[in-house]
Image 1 (cartoon, each protein chain N blue to C red):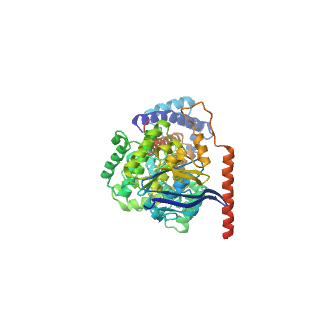
Image 2 (tube, rainbow over the protein chains, first blue to last red):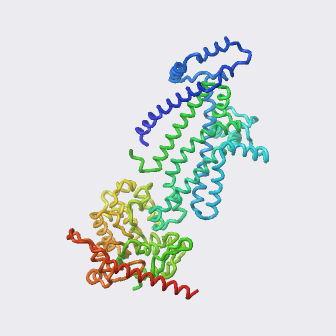
Image 3 (cartoon, chains in turn orange, red):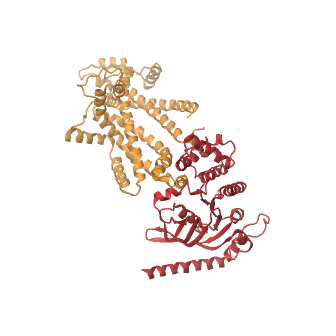
Length: 335
Length: 298
């Protein structure tokens, strides 16, 4: 992808983001539920409520509130959380790395699974490995990510309790982090005790998120490889004297990646969305977990901030996927 | 001199479930080293299948039910995958029909020629790259050092066919199966590509089994020609004899059916219906005979 087309993509994401802002802002204000009522106890007087409404600007029209919101947004100000009384930007800044790490590990697990299973199934097409992998991916696809989370907690946390099922790391392990990227930071600092603990905590939630993606991706990759195997260039590779393994891996696979990446890319955005429930289930202190609290508390500035962050993550992920796509497909490189 | 390729009484069927469709009905032919043998026939006459059976790249439903294929005196009809791979690329190569789909779209031209050199001749990257430039020069591609860096979609059909010809000749094979290599090209490019194949064939002494439906192509390039219909070779003779004095009525009808560019207004002469039905009656009685022989054996 050239710099010019990247710039064009970024410009195009501006209206998308604006749309997200508008819908999010309006929806939150028309659905029932009053943030002020959630804030103060049942003994509050109408005057108290009115005062708080004025402090948070909730006494103005939706349109005016929106204008103020946009103005503040351009100053890098997402407001103050109603329930936690902290700056929303700071709150999100503290939680976003946690979710990014989780999503990263989940995507890595998913890619390894997709490539491994996809190639294995197409190598032994019509034999038991393909049948087994097909059955596995069909079953996995039918179960949503949060259910896998619950199942893993039941199996590895209760029946054979050898995996941690709550939080981000052992509280007994001493760690004084400079950033919220515990996994990367501990690795870079060579602190393997912390790294092991963080990794142990991240595996089950990441696996829950990765499994549905693995199922969809494996099926796509397998059928794409099988389709590529019927192409003329594969026949020529056979006549060149290449082994079956080499033809699958070095001839069909690079071509099969192109449709797989496109469609799995869409699934990856579901994975980001999936972090909300999975983080909740595993008590993982990420953005999604905070989002649920924010919704329960009708914390409008925080919800808006989190939704905006998720929207930016989706857009960045989509641009990354498009760049990968252009990298994989030489026919798209010159535009 | 022993024949390079000797196909004897080859029977091939497409089998799907319980039904089977005969494709080749006892094909026999032989090819001397350095010879160009043309196989002409209509679509679905089975000519492509002869090439695929020789290379061992039949579709999974294609089953050889009888007969044998000898390469350099050795039976290769049912050899193992490993033994087959020792032949392919080195002793046998192919010029495919469709240059637009026969190159891998995600790899550069240079690497698609170099890979076969590295695999079979054990060349190092540098030597292989050097050899690739020579091979491209041999197929008359200008500025080969620029072309090796291009992807297939950046080249025309004629250019791609030249690349595929370079790949086929890369390891100096003794036999090349050319499966309608000019069919997908337009007429002006066809001539150039045919001339190129002939030139390389003469220079290298490679034998070519040239599959085509175009009698004009056969006349230009082949030493001998087999006329094939419904999986049977009706006539096999030298190219000159075939054109000057075709003996089989089907060959005569095919010759008469060729449109003449110099007489654009003359009526077309399709193969007479009576001849076609007579041929098919013959094929059907042959198939019945086969079946009765089978039951007799069982």
